[in-house]
Every structure is written in C-alpha cells, then in structure tokens.
Amino acid sequence: MKKLLLSIFMVSAFASNAQVTVFEDSFETYDDFAITGFGDWLTLDLDGLPTYIGGLPDGVDTWMNGGDPQAWIIFNPAVAQVTNESDAAADEVRNFDPHTGAKYAAMWDAVPSTTGGPTANNDFLVSPPIALGASNNELTFWVKSLSNTYGLDKYRVYVYTGTGTPTTATDFTMISGVAALSAPYPDWELKTFPLNAYSNQTIRIGIRGISSDIYMLMVDDFKVTSSNLSVNQALANKFSVYPNPANNVVTISSADAIGVNNISITDLNGRVVKNVKVTDAPQSIEVNVSDLSSGMYMMNISSAEGTAVKKIVKN
Image 1 (cartoon, one colour):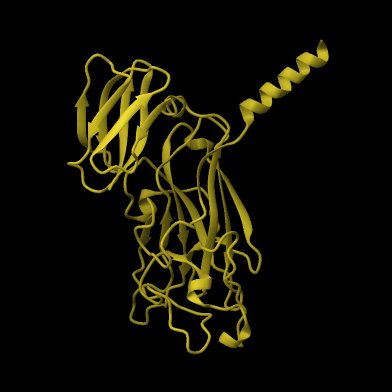
Image 2 (image 1 turned 60 degrees about the horizontal axis):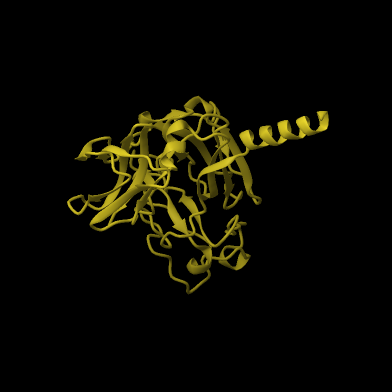
C-alpha cells in the first residue's frame, strides 16, 4: 500500500509540474529576409543606421533588405547564398548555420555614424503577447554571434507587460541583469530566464541588440513554458474560435457546454473595437468581424465561469 500511495503521489507531482509550452517560434514560417510584419513579432529600429552585410562569394548579389536600415531580419543563409568558407573574406571567420531548421532571427550590426549620430545598435526583437501561467514560467532561446573576428555581439533581455505596442526602450523592464550579455561563437548557447515575477500576466519579451561595430547577432528556437495554466488559460482552452484567421464571421463554441454572456474585442493597444451583447447564454455564437481592419485582436469571452481570452486574426 505504501508503494502504491508513493507511486500515486509521484505521478500527481509529475503531472502538476509538467512543463506546458505557452509559446514557441523557430522563425521557419516567415518570409525570407522580412524585416517587419513577420507574424505578430515587432521590431524596433531605434538607431536608424544602415547595416553591414557579409559572407557573400564574388558574383553573388546581396539578399533583399541587405544593408538597409533595420532592426532584425528573418535570415535564410542558404537562400542568401552566404558561405562559412574563407573565399568570401580570408581575414575573418564566420558561421551562418541555424540552430535548427533553415532560418533564424538576425540582427546585422549597424554601420556607425560618422556625423555625430548613433554609433551602436539599438534594436529590439519583440515577441507577440504571451499569456503566462500560474507558476514555473520560463523563457528560453538559443543565441550566437556570426563571428568573433571583430568581437562578440552584445544584447539584453526585457519584458513588456500587457498586449500593447511598445515604441521605446523605456516601455520595457530589463530582466537580464546589469551587465550586457555576449553571444558566443562558434557554438549556439541556450539562455534561460525565469518569468515568475509576471505569473498570470500577459507579456511581451524584448531582445535588444546593443552591439557596437561587430557583425551579426543570431537568435533561434524561442520558447516560453509554464508548469501550470492560469485560471484564464484553462478556461480559454474550453472555448474554440474558428475560422482563425477569419475574413467575415467567427464562431465561438464550447464543448463543455459553457454559456456565453458577452463578447468584447480589443486591439493590441487595449482599445475596445467591438462589443457584442449576448442573450440566453448560448453555447455557440457567431460574431461578424468583417468591419474590423486586418490584424491581430484579443477576444474576451465572458461566461458564468469567468472571462476567457482568445487571440484572433482578421484577414
């Protein structure tokens, strides 16, 4: 009996502490060389400087957006035709290889201003809004520098609370410590940051490249996990919203027979753009979204069990 009880306890403990992936992205589904508009990520180019390129063999044209002012880019080294070999530049080393897949998010270093302007990168890669769980919330991602010939690329990690749209560095709270972090070379490094200070909140993660005249910073396999879903997340899982993305009408339904009392839709700045009064608490309801502009919205579904929040995309 003691062994049986112990086994039950261990299974229960394991289940309660099993990590749930709240959000993950390996950047594989986005257009090659996009510098804005990839998924629900944001990029903030706060230095406004043109950027370096490198690794191109003779006779190969630069990739789209190469050298332009930008914050971060979805980089596909195979399509760009860059090389790790010395024939592209004999006086430097470089390794363009992704951690997994074919692509990653990259910050090419800024060409320093010679006229009194910025001389270093000030570029944010900002995640979509992520709803954290009740405990053991954790951020992980893989990072490396393209080269160590000119030094190692530097960065910091931040949190923005809410679903709004940050526009400046002061909108964020730094979580990576006082000292700037260095991305290693040639191997990828797994970085881990606890997020329990923001349990049961919706946040964005900001990775801020702050290198000064180095080369390129690389980020891949971004993930946020939690061991327990928040009450709102658990409730949200009981509702289905489809089709998503939608053009005209979305249907909200509950397999658990939870009646809907009210629906409000907000944009990412928290503004209510649509409110739907519901009578008789139906378990399935259609909402016309044809009047909304294209983009991502948060749908707040009120019920007798609480308010569930579902992300929807309007085409």
